[in-house]
Amino acid sequence: MAARPHYSDGKGPLILYDGGHNNPLSLKGQYSAFGRVLEADGYRLATQGPIMVEALSGARVFVTVNAMHDLENLDLPTGNVYTDEEVETLYTWVHQHGGSLFIITDHMPCAGSVSKLAARFGFNLINGFAQRKDGLPEIFSRKRGNLTSNAVTDVEGAVIDSIRVWGGTGFFPPPNAVVVSSLGEDYEVFLPAQVAEMNHHVAPTVPKISGTGLANGAILQCGRGRVFIVADGAPFTAQLQGIKSHKRGMNHPDATQNAQFLLNIIRWLDAP
Image 1 (spheres, rainbow, N blue to C red):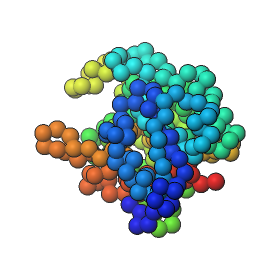
Image 2: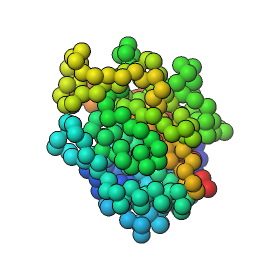
Image 3: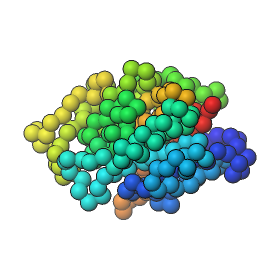
């Protein structure tokens, strides 16, 4: 992480964290490490329910993490979790008022749940499951050629050479977006009708598409505001999973730059 906070303690801009759209990863739960990283950088965080103009007017960044239409039914069809009014409120706030939107989503049904919101900014989310064909750890790096040079990775004194992810999905970015991380031919994206089809060995009858042309993360200048979208929620957690307490997220040995990557993203979204 950064050696010196971006803002004095608690004096930074307000970041609103979505807590009103069936978000299973809360700032008091699995995304507590996310909150700690940003608070240590001087940002203020608050959880927001319904998306309202009044709340957004006092915020610099709005973050949505794994919003879901239905926590009980994960199978197709996937409904959109944001209303048309909420989508337009966020779009207007970004495009006309200079707000910044951080969309963090994941595999089916998360991607499908936020597809309408993402599409308003030109992103076509795939409501599926991205997997490396060879089953190796999912590392995006400059060396591998799937992490690009851009405004988020090329920050002076905080250059990002590698990030670690855990699954998620992919998306087609709009032409004016800058791809940060890409899936490519190493990946396939499975498109099951039921989530249970991905629990064991995936049957050959489950449809799939190539990862070629699909992004994992991207940035977008939208009118007066900015958007960052990433298609996996795990990189910004810090979890211990299972009886063997396997590390997953920013605490993983392969993810030493994930926390700084998060700071670079937020600082880019915060920039005028």
